Image (cartoon, rainbow, N blue to C red; front, side):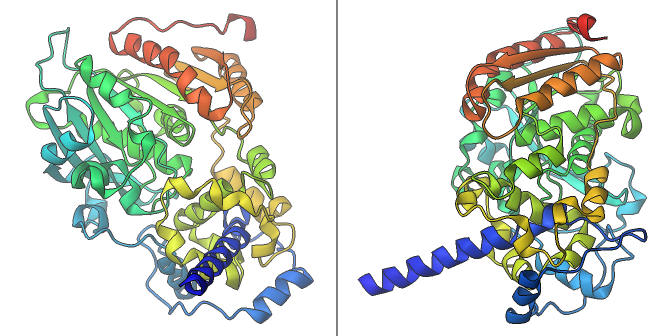
Length: 462
């Protein structure tokens, strides 16, 4: 028995080593483009591909969001997709999706009974919505979100306000989404970030409705900001279209921390170009612990204790930008198609324990400084946008994971562009900052939902 456990332990250690060394190539190895001249592989990279056989991924039809992808890359793309959940509302690509407008509801389901088990407060009703959205490349896609409404009638002015709780999903598997948990009960998965901080419970206690978006999209593309912003903005459109005009005149505000901050930030940055009709509907965006500059963070995470997060993100990016897979070596592709593709966020940190650099899993040298890396970084950089909605930006002063200076720079740029913004430095490091920053963030969001004018502290930075 001891020998068997030892073998299992060695196998698990080898699996972790393979994951850590392999998955990392995918984030910033980028996409091929005509002007790029990819660097040839190093001797080590060539040796890896000589020793490890190619992944047997048969040629396949192109993804619905990348019609021009080659059959060979399409086969790899399908191999690294998350496994189906068994629930068609999450698994099935809607037919004739291009005939729907962004935000049009294509399917919905009452999930009140199971959602009530998962939330530590009274629930009036909960509805899972599936609606048309848009991929990172501008093609028709879909999103899912759960709308939760408290049991008591709204007694305030106008229609009931809606708080959008952008949870830090930080995952690769479809079963890891908050809507799946709300639809299938508390035992379907466990993620403490679904209930801490208690954003949803607090909002429901105030009489607000809560929209909980699966902002990684149908491919679970963690940290892809375009996907996240589209899913949330189309979720607002979907809720406003519900019968009886229950939310037709409602104010919406969005808040998120860390992985959820990517989504709330993207919502604010993409509003003008993607959903300009919501300019007077979305009244504020709160973002805490934000990864604002992917280039800086990628170099900071590469090859150290934070590499586990980077490894998860890179695989997720390849799902939305499948051309990336052409620059992953054989080892990376084997790992990306293994059970790691269904991992939930709780494994992100432990995967970084080995801390090897990205280069060991790419088939080009120096992937972080290549032209191809610049391409993918440019596609996911929203830093040149101005938020047309007020922003509350906060960051832990001693964050070991994500640079404090990034949020400061975001605040200064927004102020310089004429946006309305507030910045708060919170005590502690990244995890503590989630708790210390919550009271200020939720108070600011509450004031926006009540219709109070947003304070602007940008005077000194314009």
